[in-house]
Image (tube, rainbow, N blue to C red):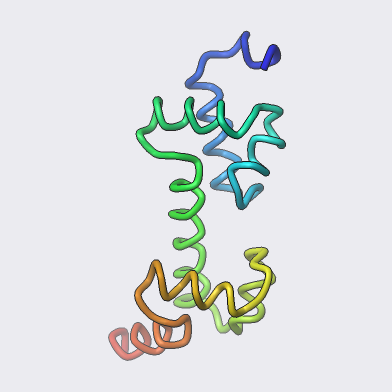
Length: 116
């Protein structure tokens, strides 16, 4: 934390958001390690400055990436898993059902029909 004592919290949050947007990290723990700060400090600073936890930012960005790949590519679910570093397609399907309300293929098919 000594390294970041010279920087304002806004710069730390900026670094956090850049890492999240570029998908350099898929968890608050991994993000904290990359930035050389503890996950707890990362969460406190991020929540105080943005109103969202690092996990919320990561989840929102991940959902955005999933939407993009399902709607704008012909990648299979397995290929999307690989691109987004999901451990397996089952985990991606559960994540998609939870945050998009349906399976990846159902989401793709529904949106293809509405765009046709």
